[in-house]
Length: 261
Image (tube, rainbow, N blue to C red):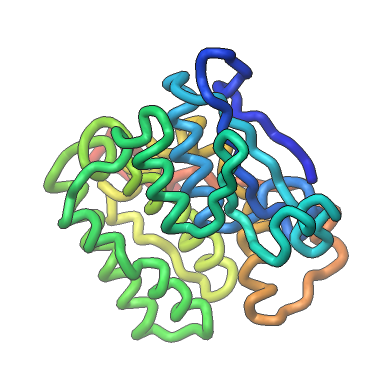
């Protein structure tokens, strides 16, 4: 079990310490793994740590070889697990509810926006269908869904989904976009079209934020996450690779007429 303290979550006697236990890399068992829910809640809590309403401690656990104390405390439960003042919250919906209702400042992250909520729903399931095998119909369905998100961002003209400050929907969407980008390209050569300029602009802004970069798994971990799901074997050299993080964008956000090569 290894610890990683979020940058802005330094110990402070005036604010509660929240611990988030996340899955470790399935490649080296130490760095951050590619669990979408782990990253989503990491981002939520990191934003609160930046606002200094909490102190955040993030712990990675290698689920292929969980330490004895983890097994003793949590048996077969898989992360994410949130611990607040000795209370362990184990289920995703309960973690979300706890952040919203019980973590200082958490209620500010959870805005009501039915259009956004319905728009980002089922995006991940479309990626899963695309990754099964190369199929243009499934790829077209995923592109169409991304096009609708691009359209909403263009129409609203805001930096993030619901305004110019991040909310829970951004913490949910951006990790999924990163999985689409990295795994889609690797397995079936799927790419987010450069013509989705508002979506790329949104991703550009997310790539500038510590809440995303500090919580984001390496490309190799995202790829290996799906290799394990598809029962594909990891090659030995992958364990030795230096982690890479895809954060470039194929458009120039400062020039609406030009795209970068």
